Amino acid sequence: KLAAATRAAGGKVVWVKMCLEGQSEAWRVFFDGDPRRTTLSELTPGSRGFELHADLDVRPEDAIVVKRRFSAFIQGSSDIDRHLRNVGIDTVIIVGTLTNICCESSARDAMMLNYRLVFVADANAALSDAEHNATLTSMLRVFGDVPTTNETIALLSAKGREQAA
Image 1 (cartoon, rainbow, N blue to C red):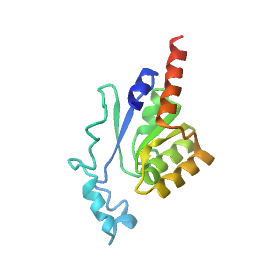
Image 2: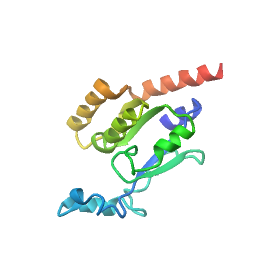
Image 3: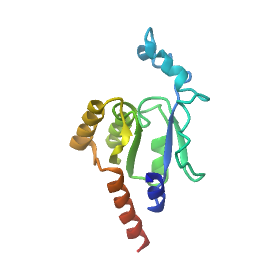
Image 4: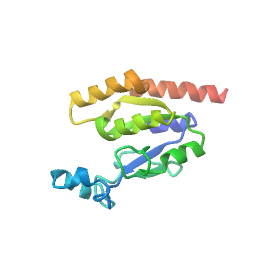
């Protein structure tokens, strides 16, 4: 629903995929001697964890960005900042998993790069309510707006009507 509303409002939908292939040396502190090493295989091309979920409405006009860090916006992770600036995007709507890891990292860095931030409360997911809610609190206090999906769609619809007028 959010992707369709974004497109209808004239926005750009960007799907972000996490890839850790070849990152064991770059992230040595994270991976060395740790059970998290299994994350490497889960987030490599061809694995289920790397692929976008089949229920997502991915369209040919959408962009797909591959990131190599928790944050899509941190230097060396992806080309998302350049891509968004090239098409005049100034607002980022964050949805995905995990709320308190990748989504939070990307949101913080996007705001610090001067993007307006919308962190959709019920379109992000964490492993626990406590983790999810702690991130929502931080987002709302410092980094951006934290509306629901329906509130975000209403804002996008109003923006689309405004542009059409």
